[in-house]
Image (tube, rainbow, N blue to C red; front, top):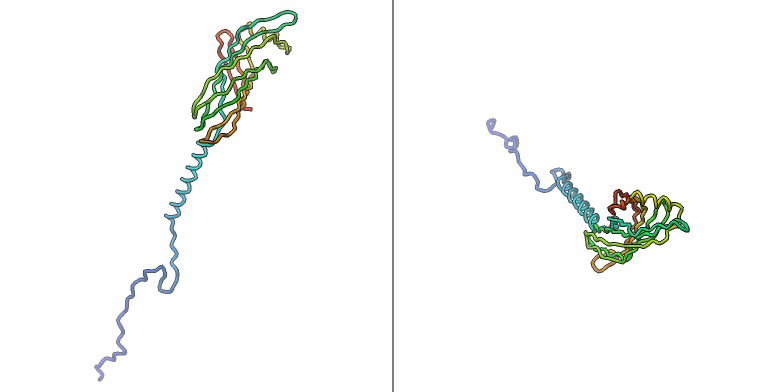
Length: 212
C-alpha cells in the first residue's frame, strides 16, 4: 500500500556508547598525561634531601682548632750592658684553644715560637690537653730567655722595653687527635700572629693572626 511505510527506509535510532574507562580512545590512540604535580613533588623532595645532606656535612665535617693568644706577660727583665748588650727575660703566654666541632679534641703538643723583628727569641711549649666538643680550653706556657744577644736588634728591644710596648711575632702550632666515637683522627693547626704587648699592664694592645 502507498500509505504503508517501508521499514527499511525508517532511520534507526542513534546509539550512544559510554566513554571508555581506559586511557585509550575509540580509535585506539593513547592519551598521554603529564604528571606535573608528581614531578614538582619529586623536585622538592630532592632539594630537601640535598639541603639536609649539606647541613649534616657542614656540622660533622671536622675543622681545625682555633688558637688565640690571650695574654703575654714579660717579667724578670734584666739588661746586661757588658761585655755585649743582652737581655734576660721570662715570657708567660696564655693561650685559648677553641674547638667548634661536635667532637672532642685532644692535643698532644703545643709550641709557640716567639720572635722580634723577624728573629726568633725562643720557644714556649706546653703539655697536652683536652678540649670538649664545641668548647674551649685555656693553658699557659712559660719560657726563660737568658742572654738574648743572637740578633742585631737587641738595642731596639731594650728601647721598646723602656717605652712599655713590644711587638712580637708568634707562630703557634698544635698537634692532636679528633675523637669520633671510638675512632681517632689526627688534626693539626698552625697560626702566625703579630701582637703588640703593653709591658706596663701586661696586656695585648693589638693582635692580627692568619693561618699558615
